[in-house]
Amino acid sequence: MFQKTTNKLLIHSRWKIALKTIPFVIIILFLKFIAHYFGYEFLTLNSLFTAIISANIFLIGFLISGTLVDYKESEKLPSDLSASLETMADEAMIIYKNKKSKEAKEFLLKLSHFNTSLIAWFYKKEKTNELMDKLSSFNNDFLAFENQTQANFIVRLKQEQNLIRKVLKRIATVRDTSFLGTGYVIAEIMTLLLVLSLVFIQMNPFYEGAVFVFIVSFILIYMNYFIKDLDNPFEYNKDGGLDNEVSLKPILDSQERLNSYYKLT
Image (cartoon, rainbow, N blue to C red; front, top):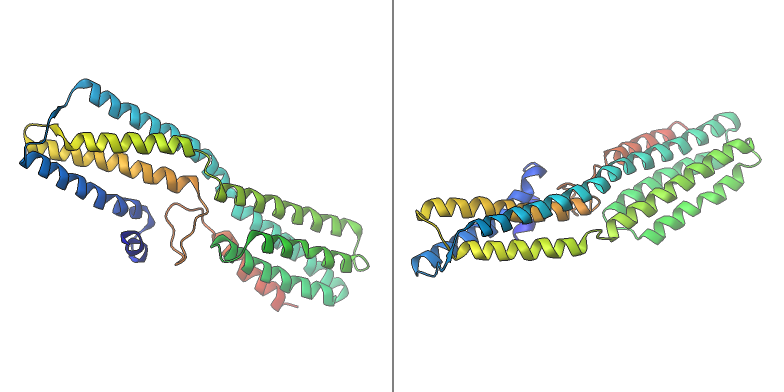
């Protein structure tokens, strides 16, 4: 419920993970106060415990470095889709201007509708198979162009269609697969054990210990959220808000340009 509330707040996306983390940290501090008040602090802070904290932070850093590689690659994919769709629209405009082709005009409209479906697909409002079927339906338009243009034009259209298909399959794989599932389990278990241990560790003076618990708990929980967010850069909120997802601006901009192409015919 708290997550839904933070998604509705008019705040920059970079603060959303922090807001998700704070309630857990508050609960931990409350448990720490209860443990201190009733004398349940039976553990002592030593060098071994701090070494375990360092090891967990190292593990989290390792997981982040792995997910960043996929994230940086994923950043390029919406631009690739946008470029391919607009390239196909350019080819269709050439055919239309040369032949005043009815088929070319219809194909421009189909590209605009496909881009709309593509945006819906990113928000999981359309199934992958349905989108692939729409992409394959371009073949009928290419057949209609055979008597209206040179063969190399059709080849270029097929190449762009193939590129779109590859990118869509890549995005579907990234979106539906967790690449570091086992690593997440280790990081989450370690974080849970460390946070619970902080509750029962005796620290003097108490208020300095509470600050230490707040900082360590916030960092560990925040980084676990951050890794999960990076691992799926295409998990968009239904309300259109972003956390750390890849920007869809290139595809949204393409929608306007594809519509303008059709209006020129």
